[in-house]
Figure 1 (cartoon, rainbow, N blue to C red):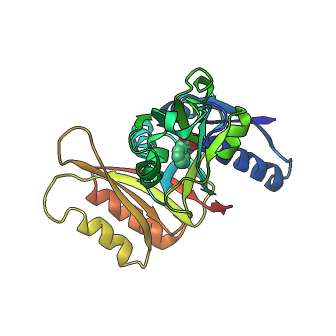
Figure 2 (figure 1 turned 135 degrees about the vertical axis):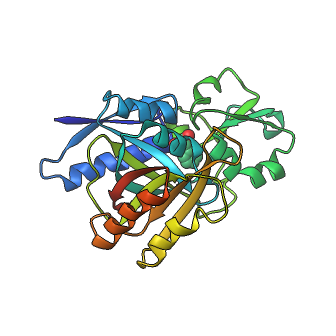
Figure 3 (figure 1 turned 60 degrees about the horizontal axis):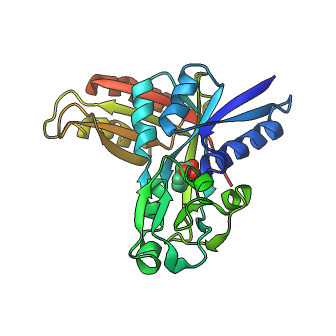
Length: 281
Ligand SMILES: O=C(O)C(=O)Cc1ccccc1
């Protein structure tokens, strides 16, 4: 049997690199050396919906960057879909290159990339291409196939992407912080396998002082460490938020189970995305 893995495309994205790393991990760690095929999708939302609709077995999506923080599209879509479970987390180093067919850097008028990549190179762009218009794309590789007809444009993507599209690298690395890395989640409709991290999200019953105190206290009083908390607007009312939390704990542990049971009483909607482990590369 071959597994299909959805990721943000077209070919050469960081999400594809993460999906490839996960595919290699499956070959190494499954008794039957499970093989996979990669399936690119035009956006992060479409990647996640493809998994939810059963078009593919698994999906790999970026969730958090060490410089720019959470990838809102991933969090918002996961909340919306409701049926996906996290199987694994992967952390990948991210090193950006400036790619262009322009003969001289002075000729460049626009730079295309995923908003996270543009943000991760903000200082470099301010210093080196201050007059250049920045245009956000769905992925770092979306604009690469058009660069041969747009000689005054450049794109920010990986060195691997440049070689895949046979395009020249003008500068590398251009990310403002050298230790730039991104965490990806592997999701599917299967139950989570368990592991030392648990991710969940909830909405609160009313917007009043202290609504977050009780939920957070449940974890604190059991000695459960929270490794991330992120708020996202519910999109219904201004000032109304969802809270996304990562715990350094396994939902199979009794203390975590009881915290999650009690948490349901203090939240309006509670979604547990699962317990999983991290592959660090
Ligand atoms: O566009 C890509 O290549 C992605 O996979 C999204 C992304 C963008 C920037 C850093 C990490 C992931």
